[in-house]
Image 1 (tube, rainbow, N blue to C red):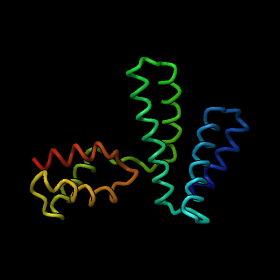
Image 2 (image 1 turned 90 degrees about the vertical axis):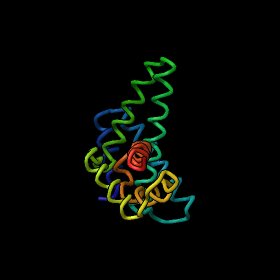
Image 3 (image 1 turned 45 degrees about the vertical axis):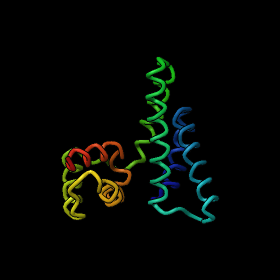
Image 4 (image 1 turned 60 degrees about the vertical axis):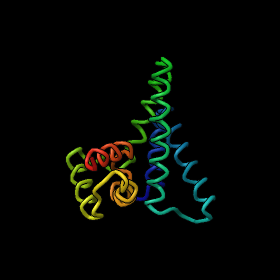
Length: 148
């Protein structure tokens, strides 16, 4: 089942259950998907493109969450956390720390990186492998740790 089909099905379910928060998040994701489809001039997005959009939405929520926490806006923190939880239902299963560590080490060996100056080369090789399955900042920290 494609992401759009899943969203439509969940949207109907949320309407029946009168779950306004979930319905709002699903509509927002659908709008983002449709906007991207129009922007790219396609009939349908690939799974990879859908995942990119979901990741972008999730990252925006996480960034906002940090801002709201630092500003002491507990009301918005709670709302944002709910949105993040709903979005994560549509994301692929996240890699464990051990799995991510193994991917980082093997990729560093693949590209024969030895110093921090080759960080860009390592990151560009890793990110397609972990797309949607790991946070980019977490990957970045691991790569820095291993290139020291």
